[in-house]
Image (cartoon, rainbow, N blue to C red; front, side, top):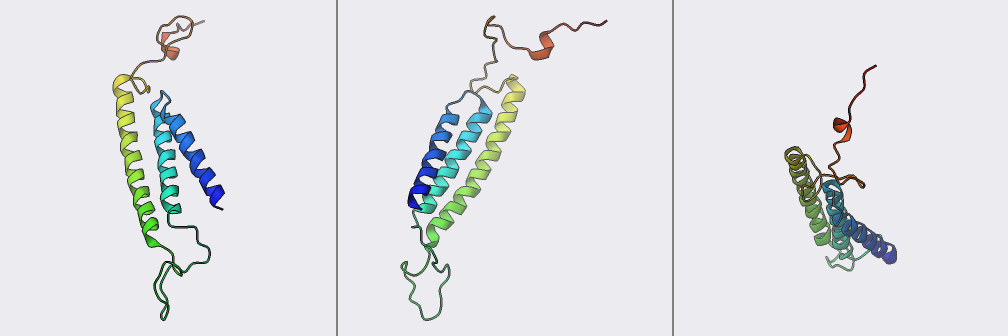
Length: 132
């Protein structure tokens, strides 16, 4: 189980870094989200993978980490989820405002260019419409 969790954390981290280095702002947003998921899994895995551990204390049983689940990584992961959601929402608002102001969704604000001409890609707006 530890190997599967380690591979999942590695795949999420690698995918997040790859998307973080892409030129589009939405891909950067998805990369940050994947990195936050990887960090949450890492924090959660620091509390040891324990099967059949009681999450609450029972009367007459001493409260040690040997017989109960550790609540600290769970609370840290929950806090990280809330902060990650707020960060994603804020970044999405900034992304939409930047796209509205610059007209492009590149990280540096540059517009797309055609491969052959080097001119900005205007989409359908640059084409002449023929009327019959």
